[in-house]
Length: 402
Image (cartoon, rainbow, N blue to C red):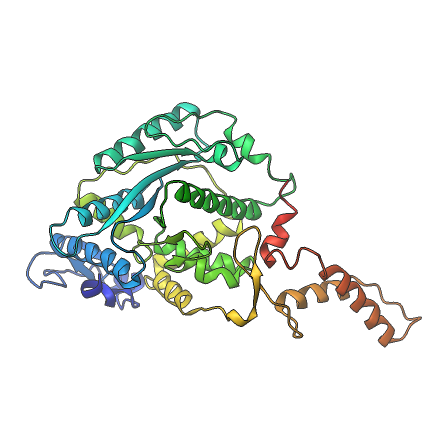
């Protein structure tokens, strides 16, 4: 909310600890209009009436799209529909913008695509979910496009349906066959994210869309930023967490909900009487992968310190890549591959330290000779022929794919 809530992303003085000591704070007037009684409280001190909250939500959504100046009138935009609150809110925000009878009306041609990949559900549960997704899309007066992730991933004919989708109990087993048995959950999660992005871009090109809208919220952006740092994808942070992912020259991925949090989205849906599609979520050990651990970490901090996510997201927006150090594109994720320099990178330093630590001391030779020996081993190990084709993270991931 540019005029409503740009100031609410700073750390609140009314933290949960102070709230417990002083008791709940009463809000009699809306923070924006100073007239109506508030019905929504965000970040412990931002109270808004219904009209101000909904007006601010629509304004924040359209302002982010308008600020980028990327989309032109009548551009076709693929809307990636995902089960849950964000997608329903995104469709409603789009419908409101398209139906406006004013110069501020959205002038795009949305194409709604649902990529089905909920393999933890039974076939019947997946079919019921598809029916609900189709109904939700039709309720918003859009035409649904259904695609099987498994079929698209395996280079089978990309079938796009508007009602029915062929699903099977063996879909996940089919997808899982592309991974080596020793792959970690972190690498599998990362690979699936890359494959899902590739499939969406392929679908966008087939449907002649120049842009893709994804329903990622601020908490997902923040956790993705920390995950990228942990996995050695620091150079991909601007594309993976920024408003625009421009790695593909023909299709750009945009994140129009990246400044919203789940509480705002949930309130938006409730006040509009929307019924988002919900499904049974898989039981996941938060310590099973770096991705789930980072999301738990960010969510926990946000619960106690309301400005956590906003601070992380703003910090990520300030990160930029030195393009003079780019030597090419990664063959797997399409991210940048950094040029090798005379100075040791953090990756090379760790690799060198590992070799030195594992090298048994040989006192029969001089220290200079021992250094030459270790240096030769380092050059041989680090001089992988694929190091120029893949970024650091994907070079580790490549060997886990069959």
